[in-house]
Every structure is written in structure tokens, then in C-alpha cells.
Figure 1: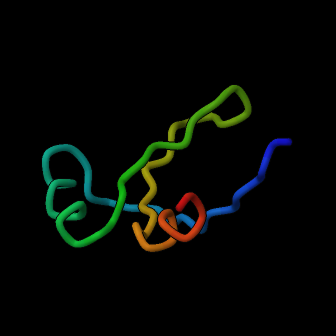
Figure 2: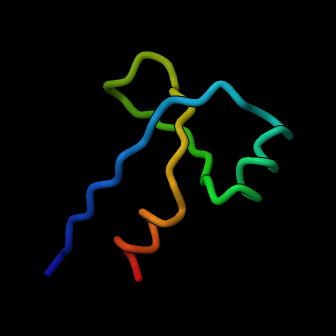
Length: 55
């Protein structure tokens, strides 16, 4: 059986090597892309939320 998890993400303006500081602050940077999305979107997700969903 497949479990479905929903995470709340917000857009981010920090990109490139500057994301290192986000990781130190407990934020996971990511990119959302796919066939129905015109342009990739840079997002940020709180690590605590990921821990609750997957641990």
C-alpha cells in the first residue's frame, strides 16, 4: 500500500551556493518541475515537516 504525504512548501529567492545557509537553518531547498509546469519553481520546506512525514 502506498502512503501519501503532503508537505507545505513556499517559494524561495535564495539560489545557488547561498542555499548552504538555508540547510544550516533547517530548511530544505528544492525545485518543482514537470510536464504541466511552464517554468521550474524554487521552493523551501522546513526539515521538521519532512521529519514528521517520513520518520
